[in-house]
Every structure is written in C-alpha cells, then in structure tokens.
Amino acid sequence: MSAVGLSASAALVVVFAVAAGGKVRSAAMFGTFAEALGQFGVPASRRRAVAAAVVAGELLVICWLVLPVVPAVVRLGPAVAVLAWFSLAIVLASRRHATLACHCFGSGGHTPVGPHLAVNAALIILGSAGVLSPTPATSAGARVLAIGLGIIVGAAALSAIPVLEAIGPRSSSRPAALPERI
Image 1: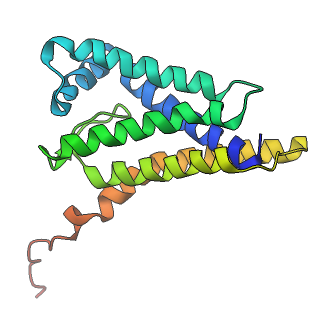
Image 2 (image 1 turned 90 degrees about the vertical axis):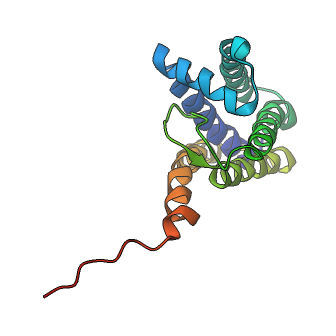
C-alpha cells in the first residue's frame, strides 16, 4: 500500500475509533446517541437498533482498515462509503434542522451542519487519495512515518469540528456592547 494509503487508513482508524468509542463509552451516552437519531427520521421504536447498527458499522470499518494485505480500494472503500452515507444523512436531516445534536463522537450540544460536512468531505478526499495513490511505501521507515502522519491527521480532523464551530457563522455575531471605561 502507498504511503498516502497508509496515512489515510491510520487517520480513518482514529476517527472511527473515537466515534464508536464515544457512543459506547457508557449506557447513557449510547442512549443519548440513539435518541438523537430521531432528528434523522428514525422512528423511536427503531432508534436503539439503528444506533447499534451504526456502531457495528463503525467497528467493521476499523476492521477493514487494519486488514494487512488487501488492495487499497478494499481497505479504504468501506470507510469512504460510510462517510458518504453519513454525509448524506446529515444533509437530509439539515433540511429539517439547522443544527444537529448527532453525538457523533459522544459529545453533547447542537452542532452546525457545515463543520461536520467539511470534515467528512476532507476525510472522503483523503480516503479516495489513498485508493488512487499507486506508489507503494517500500521501506519500513516510510510506512511508520506514513502511519504516524495519519494518526496526526485523524486527531486534527477530530479537533477541526470544534474549531470550525468556533469560527463559524454563530460566532461572527457582534457581542453586546461593552461598558465604557471611566
């Protein structure tokens, strides 16, 4: 696999592991995630089952990403497909809600749709680049460096959502007038 493919795999493992872990960290977190699926049109009677399927899907993606000797498309394709599916679900839900409490990473609060879609798009591009990059990483050092860079990229992607939220449209409104100094 190419250095780009190894980096993409490592970054996506980090993102999917934090996503799955955040949802199953406790029974309460899982329940909160399951309830949040109502924003996506999931009926109340099916939310826990769908939530379990989402977590199982994320764990399966991690398994595919760490398979040792498979073509890049087999390794990265499922991750890219799941991210595209999540993005489509976010877009469809955003027609009803400007912000979503998706609890994607076990966090709370309402999040603007844009930052999630931007990070998903970046991860889809990274995964696709890993599939399309033809040059294999031949030396052990190149492979270790590629995986290390991927871990950093995955952590950066997870950090990007709150940063994008902070600099996004909600934060651009003017604060209340400050009192005058005497």
